[in-house]
Length: 336
Image (cartoon, rainbow, N blue to C red; front, side, top):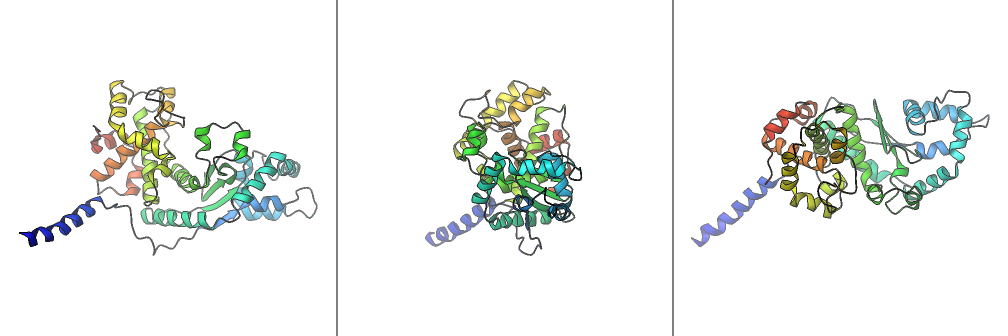
């Protein structure tokens, strides 16, 4: 009996390990993707807009559609071909706050090879799951603390001045709240960028929709991050401190019971939706120990359970699926 017992232990351990194996950990070494970041945050500040020999025309040509996107949506200087644009750009480049931001970005990001490696791995996973989709060109810039990530056709732009580190003096000068500053750090760039890309490729179009629909849509974006970053910690993907993530795990059933009991899942009240989806220091209908965006976290768990129970559904098909009621029903989600 002793010999049999000793032989069974490894077999049981192997079976147990196999059950817990992450199916999203795949081999992408053979996928030909290499992300090279184009640094407008450096190149723009080499320009002297008002000089006759200014390199501005070459810069506009080199950065193409992203240069227009940057000027219209991020720093809001308007049309780069406008006759007064060089004056506007000169004021932007010489603004004392922008100059300080530029110095801080240069200090924190002298080199982006680490980020290029992270995004290369993420987009290799992207091409694995979405072989017909385009990998965007990636740009970094200084936006004056405006949008962190912008997307357009074939373009992914990242504002480095929004990722200088939680303790950066600029963020205190701007009177940003603690909970926002905590995620304005280099480690959040890659998950924020890929989440933004998923939103651009699979927009929610959820105006006037029910809370549960918002929750599941947000859960889909989070599951997308699971697939793009199978080795990344959950706390980094969602931007929670470990303590807040642990709170969610311990109170998952209680949160769900509260939403069901108060008939909130099918609420279309805009403020109600924002309460559970938008960033906040905590969710006031729970406790001050809770994180904000608890609806996002719950939606993530719904989606994870759905994908566990429906193994034949590809990620590509799932991201296109907008039948949120069916996703909820087929997930069988009902935490204790």
